[in-house]
Length: 484
Image (cartoon, rainbow, N blue to C red):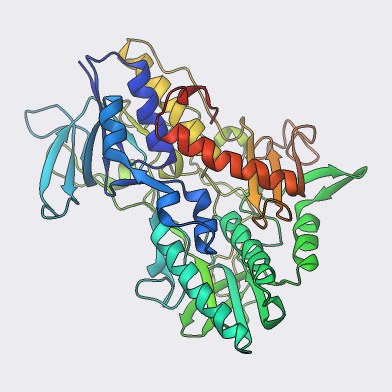
């Protein structure tokens, strides 16, 4: 009997656990360790954040789903890996601390035969002074509770506008090294749409602020699509969308401090600026959750397993290189640890070998460049491949299934306003996610498989995907037939 422990119940961890349970016989145990009792379909937090959905519509309790599926669930956070065991005991284990009410902090050593690190990111609001909804001066949509708080603040701002008070909205990234510009993009266009729907758009000034070199970068170096007989960069696509909606934008910016009503930022030229706001939704940078690693003798080996940003090293080529020397083949394929073959990292938890967008710093050495996105469809595909490889290893074979982001495509439907008759969404595909200029020398991607367009049909697709993926996540009949 083998025990597979999955740390995390987000898109990647939940997918891995579900397929492990489906493919392994019941003599094997699948255990999920996650600090929250609920699953959150994060893409729909955008709609929670503008008041179109409630948190209960994007979440559900995990315990009954896992009990029905035959998956053991521990509501706890992982704090330390012991991949070599301890002393004479060679059985590896992970130290977890309960987050159950009344049992917070209670520690347990959970042994494993295989472990999947799918802990996702730490929302590192502390990287920028004053950033975040808890101890800072800005809002977020990274969790359902953050999004609900943003919706409440938006409703208050709308009431002020109805009384004749002009409001200034600032949306974007709150640090020079942020990722997930796509989520901020969805939020700003949905915000603008809702202000029009509520009859107060004329009372709002809306500004986008981002660490992107140019609009439409999204942390993947932008993209090119064939439109109207021309090859069009995503910069034009995104700027046109913003211009049509009267949105201002500031790019090449690193927010350095958020005060009440004012965000300070520096740009790539090294200039210092500030922008005033009444409402700010600024996404934080991501880091690893802070897992430690300990060897058999009790020595700290965290640096051996994890990159400095806290994400786990896997089968990628982490050799430092200049940007022009990075290659598509540097990216991981099986997500297996090079140090311990029974360790895997999936989704955001793995350390990328290099940025996709060109890294840039200002004269003071401040990094102002997006980190690689690894959310949504890629996370699910990676989780599924990790599950396949562990099943192969349990059956005595070597892992052969791969999911390199330099060899996979991704589809994204970004809401740009939710309404069954007047709403829109930007529907995009990109192949591959990580550009491969050796295979596609002109643009790094296959333009026959990379496209983008915006329209009402995309909104209906987005609604369908919301319900379809929540159905899949609940592991209801036929869930495995729904593609990642």
